[in-house]
Length: 104
Image 1 (tube, rainbow, N blue to C red):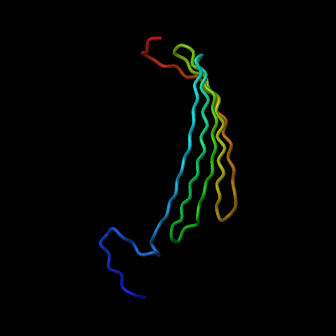
Image 2 (cartoon, helix red, strand yellow):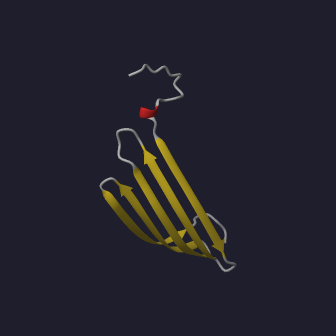
Image 3 (cartoon, helix red, strand yellow):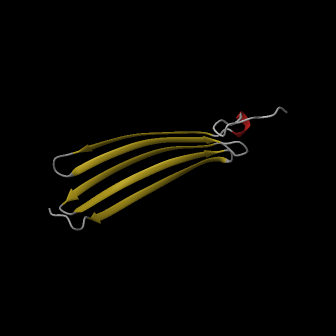
């Protein structure tokens, strides 16, 4: 093989790692405290000597604010693609939170 001379900034192709990530989100609030959110995600990583990994995800949420409280329901679905196969995760959250120290 040939010799490699580098300045610390550029790597030869056999050592190059590539990652791509993208996210798109949207939210809409109503005048009476209801908020809807949606998010789509994509991620991919290719590294030398490692298996390629990809993930695709979608999230949806509804939240309702009343005084210092907020109630929400969220659904997160993520699919991971690996050389050994595909795995899908589905997480559902039901939350009740309170803001402290604020005036309503």
